[in-house]
Length: 181
Image (cartoon, rainbow, N blue to C red; front, side, top):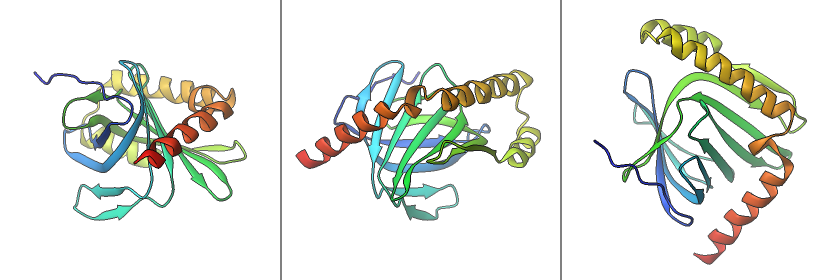
C-alpha cells in the first residue's frame, strides 16, 4: 500500500494526471506548495515543464495557482494573464498524494472561466467517447455530473478558488516564496 504524505508549504512536488484506465495523461514537473492539509492542497507554478502522455513537452506560459480538494471531484487552475485571471477546471477524482507526486484521474470534462465571470463546459464529446472506451461506471458519471453542478455554483457564488481574496492571498504567498529562493 502506498503511504500518503501531505506536502508542506515550500515543498516542490510533481503533479501527475491519469486517465480512468490507469495510463498517465500529463505531468507537471514542479509545483511549489503554498498550503497542504488532508483536505486541501494549494500550489503555485510558473513556466513549468509539462509532459504529455505521448512524450511531447511544453512549458506553461504564465504564473498559476492550483487548487485540489480531497472531497470534490474537480481541481482548479487559476492562470494570471495580462487581461485578468482565467480558470481552467478539470473534472477529476479527488487528489491522492505520495512521495512521488500529487495524483488524480482526469475525467475529460472541463469548465473554462473567463475574467468577466462567464464560463463554458468543455469536452463533453471527449467525455462520452472515453466513458464508452474505458467503461466508466454509472456511479462515476453521477458523481461527475453532480460535481459539475457544484463547480458551477462555486463559480457563480465566487466560492473557494473563485473568491477574489483567494487570488490575492495565494498569489502573494507564491510570490513571497519564489523571492526567498
